[in-house]
Structures are given as structure tokens and as C-alpha cells.
Image 1: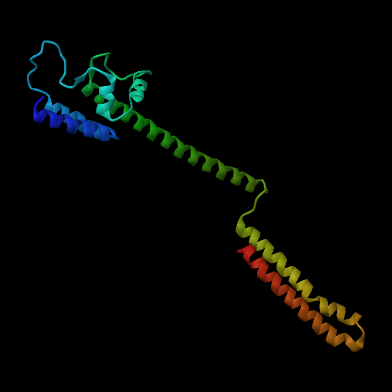
Image 2 (image 1 turned 60 degrees about the vertical axis):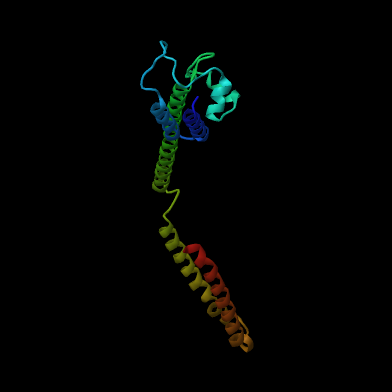
Length: 200
């Protein structure tokens, strides 16, 4: 192997080891194509990038040999046979596999988004049905009803001093009525402050 070929091999190996996406692997494939000899002298189609062992494949791709053994199984095994591992074909296979995995991931993400939208739609329909059945009321309507009830209660409570006044002894009636009215106003003010946060 000449110095140029050695440098090219090192560059290919570095690129293959650092490849994480199908685009990275495609760059390795493109460089392999550029470095292929124009004329094939050998009578057999033995490519320029043939290696004899899975260890060499693992070293070229920057993975463990156990990973390569895992790639040899399954429905879409890594191409090649014992003593005849074509790095170009393997890189192409890995590139296609990454593309397929990427498409599956996109499909899974899309399915999750569609499922989330469907759940939201079902929740909205359920809430609408419960409102029609009278199980739920709109927040604005509920706040208006609470405010109306509070106003009616306030008016009734504020009338207490006037109603109790005639029942009190004349000598304490005026002073007691004023104190009762002040206490009631203080209580109503605190109630209004607490209820304001609930209504808004």
C-alpha cells in the first residue's frame, strides 16, 4: 500500500469511526467511490475495500466486534461472508439501516403527536358533554353565581345590627349596635378578600 493509499485508508477509517448519521456514512461511501480504481484488473469482483475478518470490519467502523456479530443476525443482516467482508457494501448497508431507523423514529414521534391531539379532542368532547348534562358550568357563569350569592349574603348580614337593635336593652342599644355593625363589616371585608382570589 502506497503512502497515499495509507493516508486515504486512515481518513476513511477516521470518518467511519466518527459516523453517527446516514449522511456521515454517505460521505464515507462517496470517498470510497472516488478512491476506487477506474479499471479492475482482477478477474473476480474483489473490491478494493475487502477485509478478511470481522475484527477488521469492527476496527474500520469504530465499533466492538460484538456489535458486528449482532449485525450479522436478524431479518436484514450485514452483508458479506467469512473471509470476504466488503467494507463498501457494509457501509452502504449501515447507511440504509440508519435511514430506516430514522424513518421509524419519525413515524413513532408522529404517532405520539397524533395520539396527543386525539386525547385532547376526546377531553374537549367529554367536557362539552358534561356541560350539556349540567355536571359542569363555565367558569364565568360559576363566578357570576358565587358573586350573586355573596352579595345576597352580605346584604342579609349587614341587616343584622338593625334587626337585633330593638331586642337590646335601651341603655346599651346604640353602642352595642355600632360595635356589632363594625364587627360585621370587618368580617365581610375579610370574606371579600378571600373570595376575590377564588372568583377571579
